[in-house]
Length: 115
Length: 114
Image 1 (cartoon, chains in turn yellow, orange):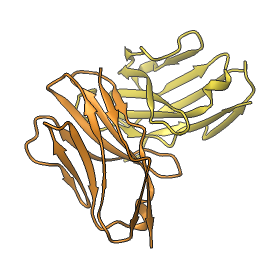
Image 2: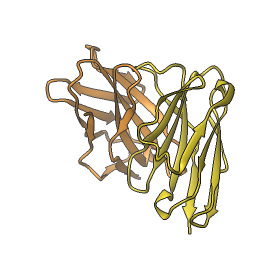
Image 3: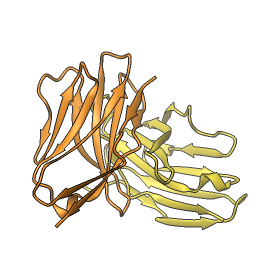
């Protein structure tokens, strides 16, 4: 089966600019996640969708980050305006359901550099 | 609050030897799941193995096994017969009941030498 697809693979922008990332989950996976991974750290959950509804966005900086999952499939994550501390890898993951024992399958990530 | 601790920033092992990567966790829940992921230098996170808190047997997946000691709150990953391709970052993660988020440790970098 095809894995989680993300684009772009790399992005370089200046601070205060905006950027958007795209994610296409594994077919049939109801749950989609966006993580931020800062260099030297483990991934941190930004937002979790169950179909097209938000389950958890408690760690999403809502003043500058937004995410949507229209039609319960693809998702986009946007940052506007970007800050230097947003430099990180943004990982998208999906799972069959949000169940405790369901492994999450990750995409290759988007490496974002803010100048 | 749930927390994952990985105390080994780096580990070295020779090819064909076994290696244990440590993971301890903290939770007040009785029901939770523990996961190990591998992250090569290319960046993708690869799911390796899962252990449920009520599972009586230690999980195994090929060369990977999880040494689960519930009373000590530890979930160490054992890789048998290390291969050069095992060189990567390894993350331990935990998820509590319901839709609780997956919380990751800081990772252990494993280097396998010929």
